[in-house]
Picture 1 (cartoon, helix red, strand yellow):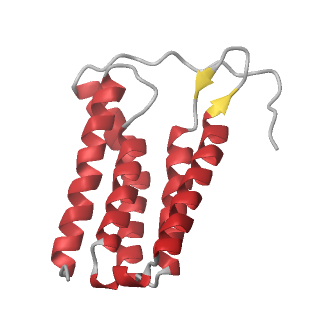
Picture 2 (cartoon, helix red, strand yellow):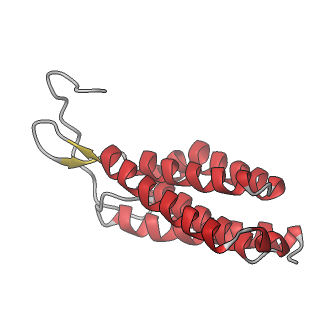
Length: 160
């Protein structure tokens, strides 16, 4: 069994590594950034830590297929969040889609009763969401990233 120091290290390094890749994408003007890839990396690391814990034996073969189905279905929800039509098609909502996927992963881990893992993931998630924007913009300015054009505001918003 992994001790909690090792779990925190694994989740922290995954969050940091995903964020660094996202920062690189952001600096090159791509529609994905530090927060989005931090959350995706955290979510996947959280599931793998759970799978490699001693409690993993509670996930049956059928349970494994259920988890796969949940994550696939959530991917479609995320796609709906990302695609946004206005005057011009723009990629928006990637962090919200990542949060949707992360929430599904946290739900899976809650369903398996991995409370400490959920707590650590939530602390890291809120750290990324609260500090990530400021950190992303500050690093973007310091490292000379490409400016993203100002988003055009449509005449009316189509919300569900």
